[in-house]
Every structure is written in structure tokens, then in C-alpha cells.
Amino acid sequence: MAEINNFIKTIMQQDLESGKVDEIVTRFPPEPNAYLHIGHARAIITNFELAKAFNGRTNLRFDDTNPAKEDTEFVEGIMYDLAWLGYKPQNVFYGSDYFEATYEKAVLLIKKGLAYVDDLSQEEMSKYRGTLTEPGKNSPYRDRSVEENLKLFEEMREGKYKEGEKTLRAKIDMAHPNINMRDPAMYRILHIKHHRQGNKWCIYPMYDFAHPLQDSFEGITHSLCSLEYDNHRILYDWFVEKCEMEHVPHQYEFGRLNINNTIMSKRYLRALVDAKKVSGYDDPRMPTLCGLRRRGFTPDSIRNFILGTGLSRVNSTVDSFQLEEELRNDLKYKTLRPNAVINPVKVIIDNYPEGVVEYLDCPNNQEVPEMGERKIAFSREVYIEREDFIEVKPNKKWKRLALNVEVRLMHAYFITATSVEKDSNGEITCIHATYDPATRSGSGFDERKPNGNIHFVEATTAIPAVFRLLEPLMLDETEENKDLDFMERLNPDSLQIRNGFVEESLKDTKPLDHYQFIRNGYYVTDKDSTKDKLVFNRTCGLKSSFKL
Image 1 (tube, rainbow, N blue to C red):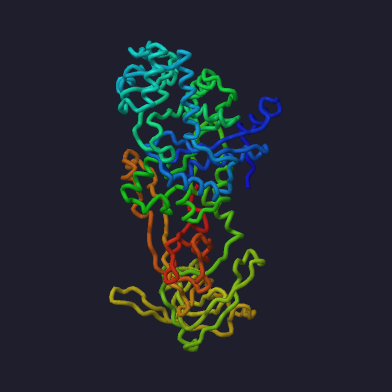
Image 2 (image 1 turned 90 degrees about the vertical axis):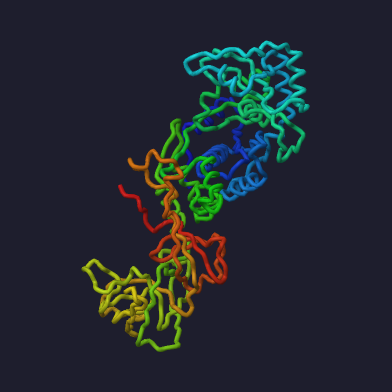
């Protein structure tokens, strides 16, 4: 695995050496309102790997302060994704664990004259807030007494007001140059059942108020977040100071990771699911971790991809081929390499005995002898890839089968195509050939050099299989489509289905079993696979399609 090395690691090292902190404590704080995607993987891996580098610890904390969108389904999915990536948090916490303590800190700010209950609507608050170039103006309710604010806030908790009727706001400075400091909202009213707290609460803390307090309650030393929170750090520090928190955490920001032609928005991913443009969050075309897992990406490939992209104070964009390359590097020496024919055409070897099936020795992975060998079937009828045959050899570069041309069937015999059968549309339905029994693989025969080496699957033992050929969900951006809505830029060919065959050694394959199908690419067994009809998803090709 690539070693993590970045500016935050340097800060942590300095903080330990100076005695500023005794240990490194980080946290991963997802909202349980969606499935995690590849962008979240940067936050997960960064937090866990940095803490691990210093023998520190990392908490998983669910930011469940907005019950309108949260669900235990997402909680369970997030916990599964973390375990799959190989990370075990020191503790699992929920923002809702701190609701009472957070409420008490809000009361403290009211008593200190630093928070007030406001009756402005959301639209009115937005107008009062000002702009980036113009200061805001004070709410007419800003000067309520401490006693009145305490009473109103308690009544808010008791459920005496409707949603949007009242809000608790920090009293800072409506003319502050940082718009986040212009009396930000701390609590809003939501009469919605919470997935853990039930109906105990009808007021919920805002992220900017709750998050720094939660970090403090847990003893977090380095609170890592993406760059858009850079101008929120001043508010983070203000709440920690004014709430008189015993432990003082610090926020550090890093750039987001974007991937070309990859949707990295939870809102857009949800829209795809709701519009049934995909089969679900785990559709293997989705950039969710569950989708990537189903497509065949491994934890090591994702970790190495994230660590290989580095970490800086600027947002970055990389090409998806880099993730695929990490997958190839991870699987190259780990996976079996069986035969699969994805677009089959039958070959009948006319001079081979009828009714005879022989078994030939075949390495499981030619580059890893320790992985051993298996037996593959061979008989009078086999399937080859349709694109491995052409009636007339076009040029010397054609190193596959053609009429009156001899090739080796991989680990079997030399065959020569003699004729073809076609249907009424002129499509080839069958190729006739002859074989040379003296050319059996391993016999040492070297009198002739074949015109290529192609793979096959023996027909009588072949297992029917569905192959899902997956491409990016989004089309490449062009001048013509750059202004289109993301739904209009969806790739109509992102999923192509092929019906073919695999060799019988795969009869007991299980979901998430990985293979390198000879000359076809890396595939994984899908959860839809059955004994009668196997289903495989193409993870990526044998070589990158990226062109410099």
C-alpha cells in the first residue's frame, strides 16, 4: 500500500513533537442520509490512515442532526462500507448522543447574552443577512432579554411552536466580513421522528454549532474536513471558545477529490435512483462504495488510489483510469484466469471423434505458478469469440482464425478453419475446422508456427453466463453537451448485456469472486448470479483505454 504523506501529516508530527497533543484522535462524521461514494473514501482513508500512522485512534460519528433525511438503512450501509475497506473505528458515536449536552451549551450561550430566539422566517433571515459586499442588519428580536430567550428556547423544546416559527441564533456580528459569523442559526424546529431518539426532541442543532462541540466532547485533536469549510473555521473556533469547552479541537481543511465523468453529488446520485436510471445505489455503474464493490473494485485498489492522488489544500480532478490501474495492479497476481467467451460462435472440429471429451492441463495464472493448474475440457465442438474469426485474412497483422488459416486453441490443439455456415441474414452461425492431433499443448510440437493463440470454451460442459459490460454513466464533456443537465449527459451505452459461456470450473463461483477472463478483462461474479445462469460484471479491461 502507498504510504500516506501530506501537509496534515506534517502538522500532526509537529503537534506531537511540540507537546501540543499527546495523541492523534480523528473522526469520520458521515450523515446517515445516503450511501457513501468514492469521494467519501478520501475522508475515510485520510482520517484512519493518518491516525494509524501515529498509533492514534479514529471515531465513527454519525451526524444525525437532521431527521428529515436520515435512515437506519444508511447507518448500516456506512458501517458495512467501513468494515469492507478494512477500518475499525475506536468508537461508534452518534451526534444525537450529545443532544442534551449540546442543548445545555446553547442555554449557556443564552445566559451569556450570546444567543437569542429569533422570529424571522428563513426568507427574512436571508434578506437581513446581507451580501458578501454589504453588511447585514440586526433582527428586531435580537435584543430580547436573557430571561425571555431562556423561556422561549425552553418552549421551543417543549414543542409549543411550529416549524420555522422560531430559531435560536448566535449573537455575533451582523456586519462581520465573514458572512458565516452574521448571527448563524444554532437550532431549528423539526416535528419529525428521529431514527434513534424517536419523538423526544423537536429542536435540532445546526451542523456548524453541533460539530465543534461533538469534536470537543470526544477529544478530537485534528478535525479534518473538505475545503468548503475553510471559511467556517472561525465560527468553529468561536463556538468552542464561547461554550467554554474543556477540550479544544482544531479544524484542518483539504481539497476535494473529483473524478472525470463521475457523479460525486449525493443529491444527483439519489436523483438517479429515484428516476430509476440505475437499479439502485449498488448498481455497478454507480460511484458509491457499494456499487464499486459490486463492480469488482477491491479495498486495496481504492485505498491505493486515494493515497496515490495525494492530499493538498486545493481541489483536484483525476481520471477514472487511475482507479482502474490500481485495480489491475491489485488483482494481476491474485486472480484465477479462466476462459470465458462473451460473444460466442460455435466451431465444429470435423475430424475430432464424436462423443469424446478430453481434459487438458491449464495453469490457473500463468504469471503465478504457485496458483497451480486445473483441467479444461476439449471436444469436437467449442465456442470461440466471434471477433476472433474472419473469413478472409485481411493482412499479416491478423493473428487470429480465418478460412484456411491455422491457430492454436489455447492449451489445446492447432485448428484450421475450412468453411462456415450462415443464416438468412448472412450472419455466421457455425465455423467448421479440422485439428492436428500431433499439436496437443505440452507435446513439444514446434514444426509450424500458428497464426495466433485464441481461447475457447468446450461446448458440452460450457455454463451459460450473462456478461454486463459497464461504461461510465456520464458522457465525456464536449462543447456540444457541456451546458446540458446531468441527466441529459447520461451515457446510453453505460450498460451492455452479452450472453456467452464460461468454462465448467466456475460452476461454484460466488458473488464477489474475482477473475481475469483470458483476453477479455477483469470480471466479478454478481449477486444476481444463479447456478443455472451465472452473471458477471466487467470491472475493467486488461489495459487502460486512456490515451495520452
